[in-house]
Length: 302
Image (cartoon, rainbow, N blue to C red; front, side, top):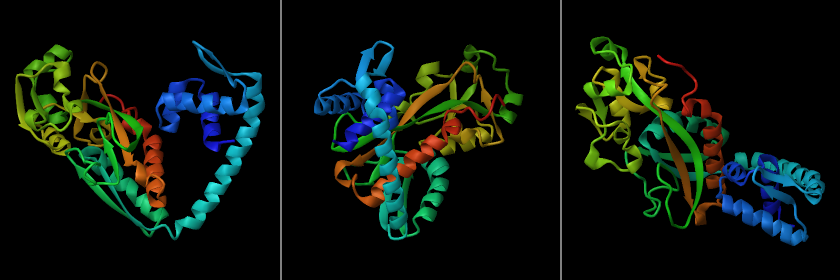
C-alpha cells in the first residue's frame, strides 16, 4: 500500500473538504482527489461518501483510519530520528529568492533559527524588489507573488498576507481627517513606479482609485514605508512590516484591506535533496507560525 496515498486519505478525513486538505498538503485539490481515488482502487472499496457538505468516511474508511494513523505515527518517529542523525552533518548552500518586504522583514530573522538547527547549512537570501527567476537558476527556492501557470516546479501556496493603508501620526495631524474612502482622493500618497512594477499583484491603487497626488514613488516597498513613516503621505503597506513601526497608524482599516498570496516554488529535480527539503519545510513552518502577523490581526486601529 502506498504511504503517500494514505497521507492524502488522512488529511481528507480530517479536513472533510478537498480544498482544505490540499491547502494543508501544499498541493492542488485535484491531486488529493486523484490520490484518494488511487487508494480506493487499490483497496477495491469506497473510503468516502461525497456530498455537497463535504467528505465523510464510509465504514471501510472508518476501519482504515486508526491503522493509517498508526502508520503516520510510526513514520513520524522514523523521520524525527533521522532528522536528529542528519542535523549535525547536513551541509551545503541553499539560495532563497523572495520579495524584498517578506525577505527582509520576515525571512532574514527567521533564518537565524534555521542555521542554529543546522550549523553546517549555508543560506543565501536574495531579497529584492523584483521577480527572482527559477528558470534562470537565480535561486533554489523562490517565494513569489504570482503562481506560474507552467514549468517543471513543485509549487505550494505558502501563505496569504494582508496590506492596509498607513500614514504617520505627524501626517494625520497636519491634514484633513480621513473618515471615508472618498476622502483619500484629496490626500498625498506614496507608491510604486507604475512602469517599473514587477507584478500585477502590486496594482493596489487601481482598487481604490488613483489619488490626485503621489509625492514619492519607489520600486522598494521598504523605501515606501520609510518615506511614509517620515510623513510623506499615505501608503499601502504589508501589515507584517508596517505594524511594527511605531511611527505609523492604520487608516480606514475597517473599510479597506488588500489580501495577496505568497507562492513557494522549487525545481522538481531539487525536491529530494536533503538540505532543500529541510529548508522548504522550515519556510512552511515559519509561515504557519506567523499567521496572525501576516494577516494583520495582532494589533488594532492605531
